[in-house]
Image (cartoon, rainbow, N blue to C red):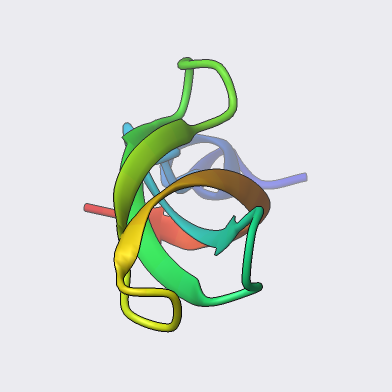
Length: 65
């Protein structure tokens, strides 16, 4: 293995783009969280039911700079 491959290794980003889904209606939205944080759970407005609902993280989409 060449030394240049080791020196130019890509660093991981500190932030992640994650997909969150409403527990009530299934409406999805993208949110940003830190890589080292726990899975995201937030209360946001759900346009399908016109009320506040809990959104839970479904999956990681990709890293951000």
